[in-house]
Image 1 (cartoon, rainbow, N blue to C red):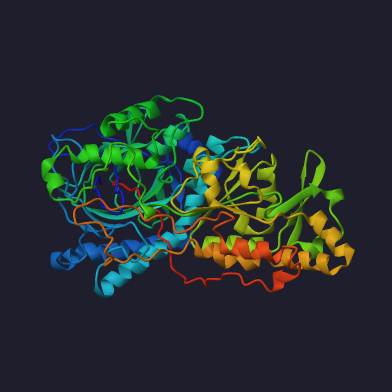
Image 2: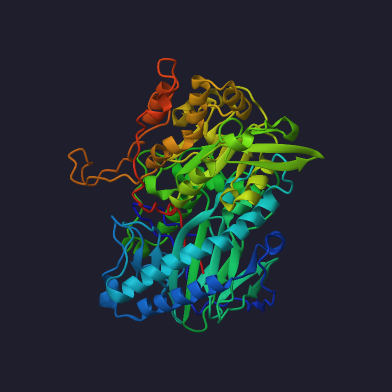
Length: 600
C-alpha cells in the first residue's frame, strides 16, 4: 500500500489492483520444499528471490493466534472498525476497502481491507474493547517471536553479501528490522494486486488460501498456501537487490484471488539512512532507482532506504486522484531533496570499539595471571594456529543485555582485523554477543571511523570508544570517550600493593556499572509537550526534536565525575564520586516504522 503518514513513511512497492476482466497468463504451481537453514535460504534467494521458510512451533502458534484475531477484526461491523481508523497524528490503524491507492491510472481501485501495525508505542492505533485487546496481544506476540526467523534471513543475506568472514563489513541490509505489520483481507471481487517488488529488504507473507504468485525467469509460479501455518513465503526486496549488486534479485510478485483470502505480511527494512548503493556487481537496478528519485525530488543524492520508499510512494499517489483524496498523504519536504529523519522512525544504536574499550586482546601467553581477577571473563580463540585471549571488561555483558532489552541496536566498529573472530568467540560464551554486526576499519589513522560511511548514522546514536580522534570530527560529539582498559597495566597496579594502585583497580572494576544508567538514559523516549508555546503553527511542517544529549567529554556528567575521581586531587575518589544515575523506566522503544508497504 502506498499510503503516506505524517509520522512514518508507509511505503509500497507498486501495488495496483487488477480488474477481473484483464486476462493474465495462468501460473505454474510451485512445489518447492520449505527450508530453515541460512545456507538453504541463501541458495534460494540467489536463484529465484524467494523461498518457503519453515516456521518453529512457537512461530506457528503466534501466527495462528494472529490470523484468528485479525479475522475477528475484519468480520466485525464497519462502525466498530471505523473507531480504529487511521489518523494524521497517529500511526497505523484501519484502512477500509477502497482506500488502497492505485499505482496505475488505468487500473480500478483495490478492494483490499487492511489493519496496519507500525509502532509498538503509545502512538499506535488499536481497536477498542476485548477484540481490540486480543488483536494487540496477538500482534505483539507475533512480533516477539518473528525475529528468530528474521535472523535466519539476515544470516543468509550475510553469506551472500560477504562470502568470507575475514575483515567483512556487514552491509546495511543485514540490519533489516521489522518496519510494518499488515493484516490484509482480500475479497474475491477487486482483491487482486498487480505485479510489483517490495521496496525494503525482505518480506514474510503468511497465506492460508493460495493467491500469491511469483515470477521467475519470465514464468509465473503460484505459491502454495499453508493451512496449518507451518511455513511462510520469504520475498527478497529492492533494497537487497541494490546492495547485493544483483546477487539477489527482488521477487516480482502479484496476487490473483479466487476465494476470500486473509494474509499476514511483515516487512523488514534497512535503517532510514542506509545507503543502498552496491559495493560490487551489477549497478543497473540501483542506478535506475536513484535516477528516478533524483528526478522526483529535484536534487541528486545517494539512494537511501527512506528516499527510495518515499519516491515510489509519492509517485504512486499522484497516479490516481480518487485514491489520493481519501488517504492522508505525506507532507512534502520543506526543500527538495532527502526528507528529514523522523525520530521514532528508526532504532537507536550504540557503536562499540573493541580493544581497550570493552576488552583487551593479547596473545594467550602474554595474559597476566591476575587477568581472572580483573576481568569479567577470559575467552580464548585460535587463528592460524596462534592462540589469543580476550580479557572482557567487567560489566560488558550486563551493558549489552541492558541495551538489547531497551531496544537499542548494537554494532562494533574496530581497527582489530580479527574483529569477527573476537565476536564469534564472545558469542560462543554468551548469546548476547551473537549476530552483532562487525565493521572492520583497516586504517588506524585519525578520523578513520565514520558513521555515515558505515551506514550507522541514526537520530539517536552513542559511540563508546577509548579514542575520540579515531572518529571523523562530525561524529566526535557522539563519542563517550571510555577510560582505557588495559589488563596488563591493571595487573601492575594490583601488584604494586599501594593505595593509589588499589584505587585505580577499584575504579576500573566498577567503571561500566557506574556509567551504565547514564548511558541507558540517553535512549529513553522523549516526552513531547503538545501545549508548548514553541510548537509549530498548524499547517507548518513539524521539526524533528533536537538530540537530547551527546556523549562528548565536556557534556557527559558521568564522564566528568569519573574523570574527577581519577584525578590526582582525589586518587581514591572513585568510590565517592556521585555518578548521575537514571533508573530504567521500562519504556518500550518503538520498532522501526519509517518504511513499510503493501504486498501480498
